[in-house]
Length: 435
Ligand SMILES: Cc1ncc(COP(=O)(O)O)c(C=O)c1O
Ligand SMILES: N[C@@H](CCCC[NH3+])C(=O)O
Image: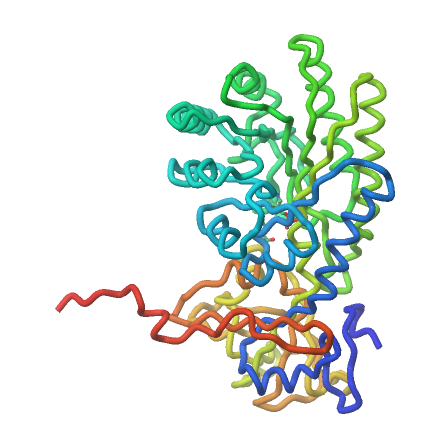
């Protein structure tokens, strides 16, 4: 039985299962809040992207955008699936090195890369650096010259496309902190610097228009815009790219309102758009690189909470409070993101009322879900929130000095702790005395 369109089962005890295991057993064993991932689902998502390119006979690299969920275990799964890896910071790169991710398969992003980040990337011979701005060109070329090394580089451009998503996760629009602007000549100026530099091998362009996008039209329009520029640069500079990186952004189902496309549809439409322009320009087909994050891990993860206090305000609203909230999932507070959930130990009971799920942080805005239909509940019940696998753990905070939850992976009906729950000692570890 699918629960509210989510690919999870309910067992004979009426308990929600993930990967064939009882979520109530998991909550008892590991405590709550708890992030739980169905690893088979992660692998299936990754394989859909990779296999679709194979079926189409198109050379491609699928780089998991590790910002969505970066832990050593997750990066080991990405490695096992032969994915490439997108990192945006020293910390994400450090995690990749700890996971022994092959460095030539790592791509470095970032709109304000530090000298240390660039140096670390160059020292570890990572596969590609996605250059974002003029300051970075100066830093990068200086470091390469000092070290007498060369680097493969993509140039991040902003095409001026407004994707249909929340303002904060839109990145390809003209007014963006990311990348070189294609409209105002900055991209062309950067191109000239990069293309003629002896320490740089400019493999092509990168573009990421935003996240949680449910149609392919924005991506196709972006491809049109990129090829306008490429046609111009072919004519003026005899330049043809060997790589086109179209970023990530493929939407997932958080609630029944979301209607995600199958992931192979994105791949097929993008390939079609690129092939169209390639044949018009009469150039060799570039390799296509993608950077899915959310679509690989989002629906594969759930969060289990224990329900504590409950408050009824007659005629206004009923609250149930859980033992986590914005500190393990900032997305509702940050983007008004909507989530769906069930009472995991009463997953087959009829719905009788609507509640707002409040978190435990000292913020009125710490509300995970508004107007969630649920059956009768008691304190101590377990709430399972769906589709928390992306940008939950990775955006967690220590506000109110909460500890970050543990992470458990399920595969072949076995549970494995992959991130320990933090202790209060972890939280104060770097505090120094002032006495
Ligand atoms: C450059 C870049 N690539 C890839 C991603 C991953 O996006 P998503 O998780 O929506 O697939 C992001 C985040 O939005 C990004 O900024
Ligand atoms: N953190 C965002 C998406 C990442 C945007 C990065 N470019 C989210 O939770 O949806």
